[in-house]
Image (cartoon, rainbow, N blue to C red; front, top):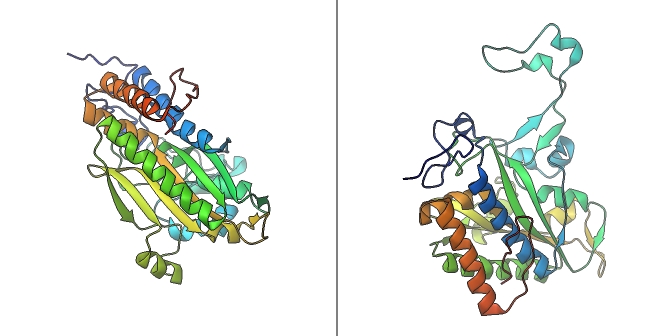
Length: 315
């Protein structure tokens, strides 16, 4: 029998408790076992990126709303967008916090000029704005992301969650090769984990659904998701030269706009899939460690040390 202590909000199968106060609001917490597995997974995915040549970077959790608007973010993600605003100290005196609703009224806030992005890679494109990049640039980051949802469900659907991404900026072929490479890595890792995944084309909201680009993406999919059961836990995305144009990111070799693509891993969603598949934190962690060891043995790849003290594979 598994006994869950107050410090560990996962049940015997690894999901967060349905009665935990944060779970129904999309803000669950993780105990020691879940934290260890999350770090192990992030070390693994970061290791793939670093071995491929990616520069690890750290991005801010908030971005200027004006910058996101320039990328059509609020046209393409209005249903998921979350913004932040400081208190208006003068108006707060007459419009205080409402304890009954648990909210500050809009009149007590300054205009919302900050956005909480729903994907890590937006910060990468904005950080490279107005720069020239090599034909084969790679960046890897892990950031908090935020999405307003119609409902929240444990680790499967959250308001705030962590996303590891490996982002390619450069020539068209480099962006395409990046996705092909990481598709192989994801599929090999899933096989080693005994985690059934299916790859499905999905609608990519980076492009306005009402534009000519939306018509093109229906003919040539630009986003593929990897699903365990009905849950997308990773995706590979090509943006063509959309961000290169919007952010004025150019190639040092030709001066033309850079092409970009990204591979994204929803870390909490991986926790959900692995604990559901393997029966709990301990079994899921052992499955990841064994998969890492098996893939290292098959490839003879070096082992990068991670913050969790457990090494991830490079495949």
